[in-house]
Length: 91
Image 1 (tube, rainbow, N blue to C red):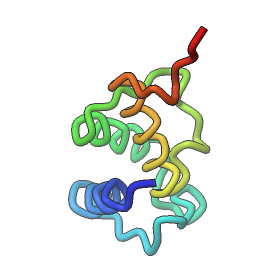
Image 2 (image 1 turned 180 degrees about the vertical axis):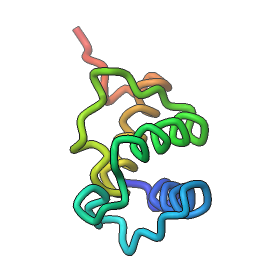
Image 3 (image 1 turned 30 degrees about the vertical axis):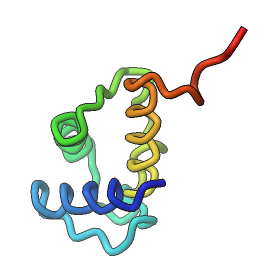
């Protein structure tokens, strides 16, 4: 997982949502940082910042439970959007 993505997500939460998350592994839901409205707001910011689209199939709370999980989600989405060879199969 890219440290720069973790840093960007952390900065996004701090600067755009005024959330001071203590660590990349902190549970955002359990700690009370994310409720349903904050989740929607965060998804909008992630789409704007990283250019990823969060589809209905992607909307599982587990993917957005921590900064580290959000960063992994963004990496997966970025790889798919750029035709990452790891995601394709060769026949």
